[in-house]
Image (tube, rainbow, N blue to C red):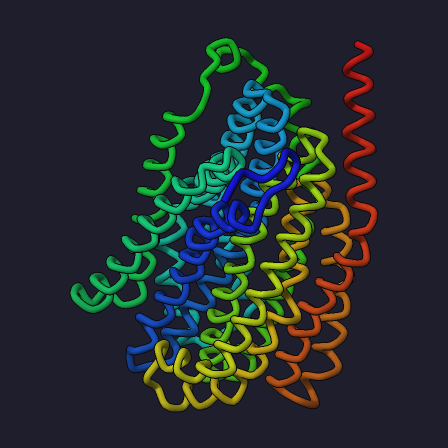
Length: 453
């Protein structure tokens, strides 16, 4: 197959970029899945609940600052499209400084963070005890985890997808192996799960920095200058990312409400929901891999002011996301019960999860469009509509939980979550018509201004 004409990209080229990113991103939820499965074969559902509570806390802490990866990726891709390596370096250094500072702050505030989480979630005493063992170990990886977000964002923006794949798979395979070793061989219990994750997070960050040194263009004048820590640019970076911060806060509010509401229904329900949510996360990260590919191409198109490439990326991204949604729906419909059996041998937990699995089967169809469109918005660094979409969807989710859970119990909770994913897709699509006109008007305006200076 020949090269695509300038300004376009073929299906083969899109998949060549997307498939390594899918493999890299899918390894992330597999960590949580393995954590859940490892403790799911112990003799008490409180172990699964403890991992669910601990994971919720760290997802809340880390995903609130997920914009560090997303924005670094988007701005790096735009800088690559514009040929500005100096901007790439400065953006990385500022984001790395912010990530490390926030991670250290989490260490200082770890006790209040835990107390606040327990006040909000209010799990049973057994679940709280197991969750604390996981939290007390894993929290020490906070600075490394957030710095790794920046490293991965930079590598994705530079389209070094094979390096990202190698880093993610290597880290996560190590984590999986250490999980089994610490829990079953050393018999550390849930603390072993936290220790395995901590070791993997630290090593992934160190190795990622070593890989970066191979690809980054070091400019001594930038490194030695005070511009890295200049107050106004740092404040501007935070303000630019505030929309993504709000978006993530809304998403985490949904997960938090879901987990805490399920926890109020007992240890078996929270354990069953934790397993089903792991299946949801795995499917979501498949779509995230495609969205990352679309984000890279959209960022390059905006940076180079290439409308044709942008439109081509929209078509390819939506086409392959729809195809993936169909495939995952069929897989869940045919093999959902078998997948659940991989997570636990506790009969009560298994049978409860199976009774709710059909809700998760609806997720790919209702959620794929919103997850794909998110990639276009972040690649174009236009996060305002993403923020608005999540605020609207969160509001409807809260109302739905309030109305349906008293009547339908856990079915009402899952109905509300699927409604949320559908609304996220519909609202992002409703806002999408303005995106291309906005970003290319802005790009052309900037080009005219730069040409007149």
